[in-house]
Amino acid sequence: MGYNTNFTGELRFATEPTAPQLAALNEIFGEDVRTHPDWVVDRSTGCTYIDLVLTKDFGGIRWDDSTEKTYGLEEAVNFVTRLMRQRWPDFRLVGHLNAQGEDFDDRWSLVIDADGWASRQPVVVPGKPVDCPHCGKRFAVEVP
Image 1 (cartoon, rainbow, N blue to C red):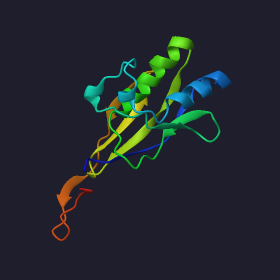
Image 2: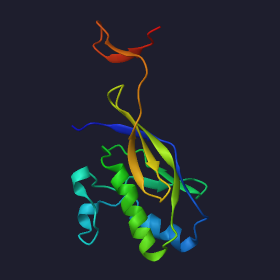
Image 3: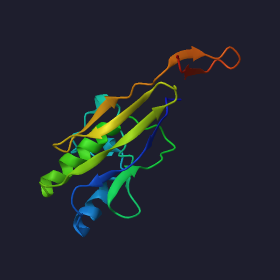
């Protein structure tokens, strides 16, 4: 079994997408990159699936709530951007996704920079980390 990370939030399209763009995205989303030898994906990030879907309003993309483990989502977002920009050079996403791993302090944000590329940014968890003597779980308490 692997380690699980959940993502919340949406990455929005900088400009309204066209029908051909939405169709192209739907062909990419959910795919196993290992079955596409022509796709150039940095697999050292653990990226094996494009775990993304369109939002209900078609105004952006979000994590697909995968039941399988999601690894390398920032690489998946950058791959989608690179692939889309081959046909539509002005394709751009904006926004960020919040990531929460299984460990309470494993938090980070997938942030789209000014050039439209995704990166992993740390999130500092405030408080002092402590371990519960009863359940062994780790959490943070505020220190005055």
